Image 1 (spheres, rainbow, N blue to C red):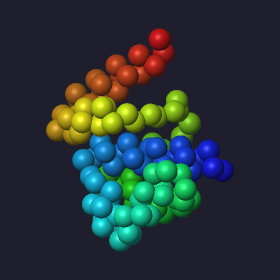
Image 2 (image 1 turned 120 degrees about the horizontal axis):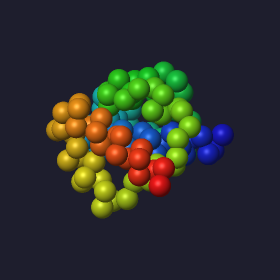
Image 3 (image 1 turned 120 degrees about the vertical axis):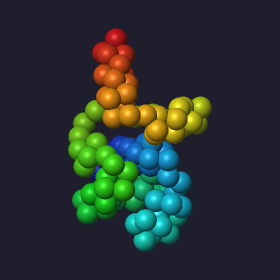
Image 4 (image 1 turned 30 degrees about the vertical axis):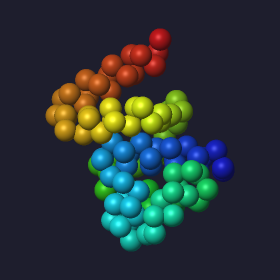
Length: 107
């Protein structure tokens, strides 16, 4: 169960960063204290399905993004800015990036 919480937490952080939201902003949109978001992202707090649905809605991700099995998502601080830079790209450009990333994961 702890591994699942850590996986979901990493994806929450990725989705939040991709949506160009701070922990404070996500917490405000969810009517939480910032510390709740911090604990979620660290895998120290279980996230229920309703919360996942709300985070998905806020960040523009699918519920499956947070729950399906995929390779571990790692976020390095030097990559955070790149993720923010992608925020303004068109849907077609983002799809192209996703396809490229998938090809690179297979190598």
